[in-house]
Amino acid sequence: MKAIAGYCLRAGLVGLGLVGALGGGTSFADTAVVLNSRDGTVSLIDLGTLSESARLYVGKEPHHLIRALAGHDLLIANAAGNELVLLDARRREIRARIPQVSDPYHLAYSPDRRWLVVNSLRLDQVDLYEAATLKLVKRLELGKMPSHLAYTRDSSLVFVTLQGENRLAAIDLAHQTVKWKHPVGEAPAGVWMTPDERYLLVGMTGADYLEVIDWRTPATVARIPTGRGAHNFLPLPGGKRVLVSNRISDTVSVVDVERLAVVEQIPVPGGPDCMELTRDGKQLWVTSRWSGKVSVIDMGTRRLIKQIPVGRSPHGILLAYDAPGE
Image (cartoon, rainbow, N blue to C red; front, side, top):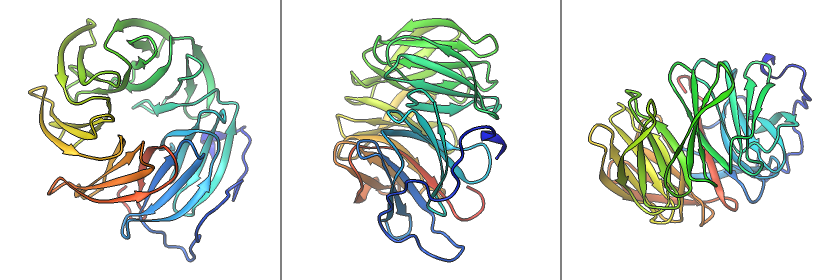
C-alpha cells in the first residue's frame, strides 16, 4: 500500500486477542467501530442487530480514528502505544502496524490529502506528516496538551486546541510555522469550522459553552451556552446545524449555525463524547465515556433506543459500511 510504503507492515491477523466469532464468507455487516481507550480494544457493533459482534486488542490507549487514504481501512491512533494501526473493519483484522509515531492522540488528513496532522496530548507537540508516505516533515512544540484539530478548506491552515493552556493555535502548513495563538476558555477540546468558513467553534470541556472565533483576526466574537463539559462536534446534513456533546450535562446540543444558538437539547446518558450519524440520518451513535457503553438515539423522536455495552472508556467511533457509498 503506497500510503505506508517503507514502514513495518504485518499483514493479516496481528496480535488480535479476538473475542467473538469472526464470521465467514465474503459479505460483512455494516459496523460501528468503537475505540475502548482504557482497555486497548476495539468493539465492532452490528448496525442491524445493535449488538457487539467482536472485540479485538489493538494497542495501548486508542483514542481517535479516521478513514485511511485508500481502500476501506481505518487508521487508529494508539497514544500510549506510540503507533498507528490500519484496521480492516469488514474482515475484522489488523492489516498493519506503523511504529514510531509519537503519542498520537487526535489526527486528521487535510482536505487536499497532502498532510496528516497528529496531536500529541501527553507530549505537548504537534507532528506534521506527508500524508502519502507518512514521512515526518515537522515537529512543533506547540504548547500544553494539544487536543483536537480542524482545517481551512484550502488546507493552508490547521487549528489546534491547547487544552492545558486555554488557547487556540493556528499553524501555517506551507511554512510549518505557528501563525498565532489566541486565548479561549477553560480546557478547549473540539474545534469545528462553520461551512461558510466565517467562524471556528470551540468546545469548552472545562466550562459549559462554545466559543465563537473570528479566526482571521483572531478574536472571540460570541459564546454559545450548550451544557457542562462541551466537548465535540458532528455536523448534521445540510450544514445549517451542528451537534455538540456535553460530557458532564449528559446532553447533545443542536446548534443553529446561522443564529449561533442552541435550538434543542437531546438527553444522552453516561458522558457523551464522540458521535456518528447513520447514513440514512435516522440514528445518532454516541460513545458514553463514563458508562462503558454506546448510546443509540432515534433522531426522529430524539429518544434513546439502546445502550450497548462495550469496553472501558469508549472514545472514538466510526461507522463502516459494507455497501457502496460510504
